[in-house]
Length: 143
Image 1 (cartoon, helix red, strand yellow):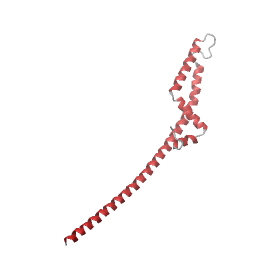
Image 2: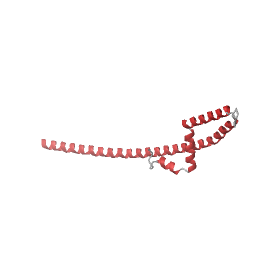
Image 3: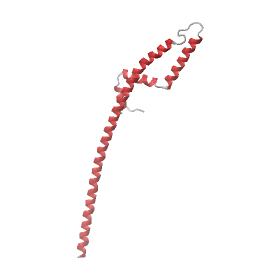
Image 4: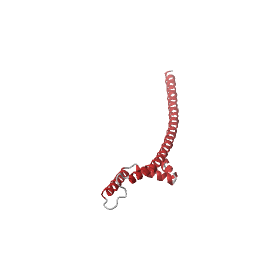
């Protein structure tokens, strides 16, 4: 589930409708569902044109079908490229956000380490002070 407060949801919400449409088309064309449906339509097209008794709208070698494939490819390629370019930009933004998060975490860890070091030094100073006091008490009790 995508939360509306993460960077990806905000990025998607900020896209214009054309960019979202291009992403949807590219996603659809890159799916097995699209391949299967297109294969069924092509086979149906060929069968209807080969066995059609009364009317062949695209006789063998299926020049109209080839024209349709060329037109589909002519439009699909730029749409897919637009989607890939946006994906690259999203990846760059995501990498930058990850880098910033890691940098902030590193600084916080360094601050924690400094605090722990100060606490450790203070503890050692107290132990040394207590040992010196104990040494003085032992030394004064011997006299």
